[in-house]
Amino acid sequence: MTSIYDELGVRPVLNAQGNRTLLGGSTPSPAVSELMAAMGEYYVDLGELMDSVAIKISEMLGVERSLVTSGCSAALAVGAAACMTGDDPEKIKQIPDVTGMPNEFIIQKQLRVRYDRCMTIPGGKLVEIGNEEETTADDLEAAIGPNTAGVHYLAPGTQPGALSIQEVISIAHSNNVPVIVDAAGQVYPTDLLSSYVKMGADLVAYGAKYFGAVNSSGILTGRGDLVDIARKHSFIGFEAGDSSSFGRPMKVDRQEVVGVYAALREWLTTNHEDRFAVYEVRISGLRDDLMDIPHIELSNYPQDGPPEGLLVHLDSPALGKTAVDVVKELREGNPSIWVRSPNARPDAYPEGQNSFVIRMPTLKEGGEKIIAQRLREILAVAKP
Image (cartoon, rainbow, N blue to C red; front, side, top):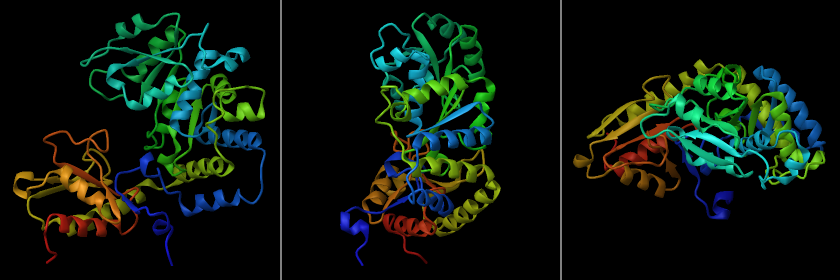
């Protein structure tokens, strides 16, 4: 029987990178998939469903309000819009025309990433402060003005020289300015799903793919008044209310909404020690399969927490291949194998870096055996 992959002419991917959008984000568990499928039996009033799920999520996280969105970027976009317009129906309709409203979001230079561009979708403008070495409290104070709609913060904010989330919240709130946190993948330990709000952040956005929901889903949590306004900016505000809001294209379907609820519930009740124990067994087996290959070094990844992958370091001069060469050959096979760089960006291999990581959380069971065999072929080592 011809598989759907053959029919469409696409190669299946063994994903050893992690929850990456380009690769499909995540694979919901059988229990989550079953509940999502059950939502296909009947149509529902999405406004009613969204509000019911929002209440459940807020209760699970212990936050004032929540909103299911079509991803973390969408959560940041509607959250930014809420900070800009307030609860003014005319301004909500006016977005992305920002005439007459504050639209600047202050952001530290050390905490810039490509994804912060989503703040500009509703007409926001990013105002960068600090330099390569540090950002000071005075930098933040000086940047706040009449056009400031909020302060953007990229969690966890551990980059050297960056102001801490506590410092940012204190300074912003002393100037009556809200703080919006991009906490996309900050889902473990699980208290991170509520800790930023408890610290005082006004809005916090998460990617739901990181806790087992589908790729195209996320949540916005935080202050009740601002989340309610963000809802008006969202597709459901357009469809179930009277807002001609900019967020209409960023819709989620009923299966996705229930998937977020089911995946979050499962994530919060999972024994994560057991989860990491399974990874350790798989990592150990992979290490055994690779340890006799000459000119490579193997170590747990990360080294400062529960291991979820294996770091492979190459002696490139001895092997005659760099990490970039090996990664390329892994991808060109069938199935295509995607590993990640140990850097912040999964495909970033600066000159001189000859390491890559094989991560377990998104790797199909048994996939590590296939990866080991491919590495032996690429490095021309026969299995003894």
